Amino acid sequence: QVQVVESGGGLVQAGGSLRLSCTASGLTFDQYGWAWFRQTPGSEREVVSCIGWDGDRTIYGDSVKGRVTISRDNAKNSLYLEMNNLTLEDTAMYYCAAQHGGACYNPYPHKYQYWGQGTQVTVSS
Image 1 (tube, rainbow, N blue to C red):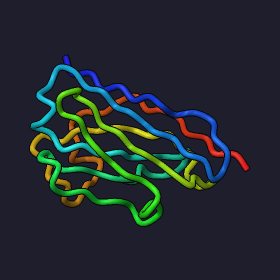
Image 2: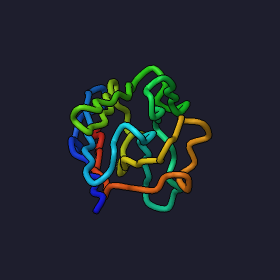
Image 3: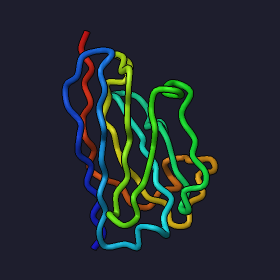
Image 4: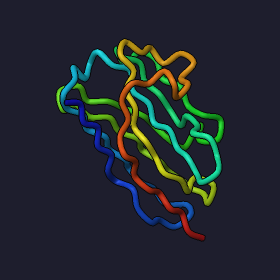
């Protein structure tokens, strides 16, 4: 059974930093491309960042470019998202998702087979 679990969310002041983590089990981690999505109530899920299965390609959403870094550690079956200079607009539920063989092209949510339950990030003024 595949399990995907996010952690690291919380309450942070604007301008602060957070590091989100995602660990997976029940699948061959390095065969999957991975992504971070976020969603606020009443809005569609949007991609924050993705990384291809081989780690060669990454993309970042326009709203987070220059402030976040995605990385993966295949030995630990883990995905990370380092977020800096957080703003109120970064408040959302953040989800980790896996796409078998995904190379991080056109990372639409429907392309991802496995999802975690999410971790809440709340940025306060």
